[in-house]
Length: 305
Image 1 (cartoon, rainbow, N blue to C red):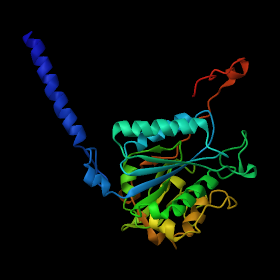
Image 2 (image 1 turned 135 degrees about the vertical axis):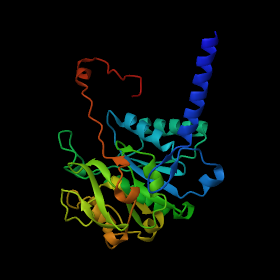
Image 3 (image 1 turned 180 degrees about the vertical axis):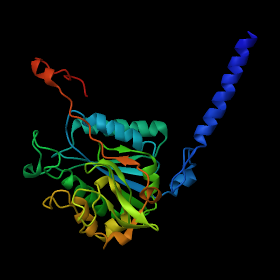
Image 4 (image 1 turned 90 degrees about the horizontal axis):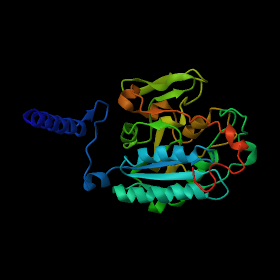
């Protein structure tokens, strides 16, 4: 019995110190990021992050949205604009949003969700057999987010930033803290994109001087959609700045940013002078549902997947 009490006491002390060490941890980045919970006064003063996410119907849609939403639940002061590629909002995404809002209330988080929709014209839609890069995706949906922000300007917090977040990317929580104090346009590395392990801005003396990229390096801003954030005031001031479906492949980001700033000298490098990766351009694999065709009744009959 004496041995048992000794082991129990030792384990209790170890767990206490381990727990304290974890929650007191600070990450070594250009901006200190604490895992401790902020008090309400500190949270209320944070710049608001508007996150625009295009989404479209597919077998993995709910799974991808669930994964992203559980990341956002850990980020204070977020307003999520979720834009469906559809003529009307779908039951699946409506249910998802309603459930997420219930979870946010239960957890005491301040995540806000606005559910929008707009359909992509057929001529710009990918066919099932098309490679993902053949046509631009999410153009109309990102523009719908821009329209909503400008139409609701009087109700917006102008102390904030806009970030375009795809629903199947992977996000380190630190990326959201990095972007909060964006003055115009902030940038950072993106992993697993452009045929490289990482694409990133090159930084010297705190200024962006070039780009580590292979694909079309002559672009004005050879950057992925996940690699920048824009101050919301700039979005409201440059009211005609939009995405254009007809621009050359891979130039969406450059054409958009050229409507907001004049050159790389205005970019603000984040993530420790762009030396750390906090976002990855991952893609969810299309599931092989070959056995479904053999069923008289679909396996998801009466159940939402």
